[in-house]
Length: 437
Ligand code: UGA
Image (cartoon, rainbow, N blue to C red; front, top):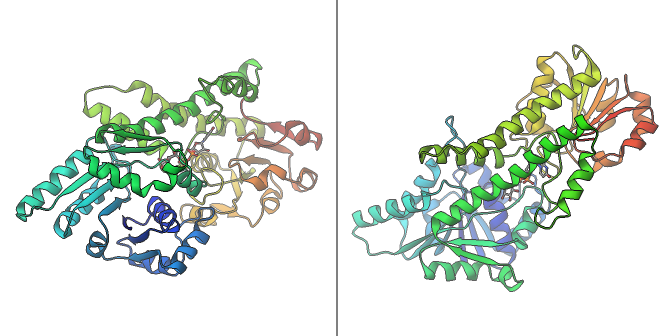
């Protein structure tokens, strides 16, 4: 079966590579010609565990091909996965320019029945608008060609996207057309045979499931961050509180880890878009807005935590371990590290940083004059006045504290991900601060 992927970003590349590895003939398209020529040689624009190997295998078997020719991509298959980006606008709405442009191109270039599958996160109602746009253009072409729209939101997490695609918790297929639903079920045969639940819904409902899921997960984090802050003030241990809550099957243990605030390209953007959507509908989504406010406050609170431990930050060397918004990715979009570094720089601190994957991306935002980028955690900790752990990379969970104690200026260790053992850290003479304890 042929499959077309329109948009070779993170979602398109993971979706395309996984489908190609299952034997589908996948043609991936992108307007960025340089990206496409790199991809043809197996060079990825992002770091995602396992993706490089998967892509190279699929290129070798010939199941995965790349092109910049959109018309060709549209004609390659009946199934068009639309995975273009929908970035946030100044007013928090979603920029749907690419979605509509692709819809127009499909309408002008389609030569037979097509299923247009929206994987990109789009505001509720977008599928319906695309349906009208394509129908209007086809009517102008006096064409009898048929098509269907499907909302099939992705629930991939950066860092574990391949596993999330192959073993999803659920597959949501939002469409008015039984024909389109059956085609999508064929695409997901591998997952369905393993018993993955499928939810067949209307288009709008599927679009909303994506926003509601991301907002709810972010709400869990913001709530836990708030509880942790209260724990710090009243002497309770936030980690054990989280465990105690998570054991209740109605709550569940996941996404209850307190931290410096959530980041990434999805949660902040989607929550803002959801509130914006509600505003347009005349509903003030106060709870949703509060999730973001709590998150912003959490990042500010982290700066105060560092200041409280160090005193005046002027000319103090602050080590930042971890720049990406979470481990196993080089993505720094909306990373808490950015706001925290910004706050520290405003207070005239000297920043030394290390991250296993994200330093190249960070260098595009902060030059080597603003941040001293180091080649390993120990170089970053030399002469430090405070080590601040911001991303839970595996290599930060087994630091050599004896060595660290011998190279720092003042022994202060702030673990904003709670991945180190407080008594071990203290046993080497460090002042330790975690989060929520
Ligand atoms: C998120 C969702 O988890 C995916 O299901 C969804 O498909 C994706 O957005 C998307 O919309 O494309 P992702 O942004 O990759 O995935 O990252 P998450 O693993 O959800 O983490 C988001 C942020 O929450 C990170 O900054 C992480 O450190 C933070 N977090 C997560 C916590 O602070 N505590 C937790 O317990 C869990």
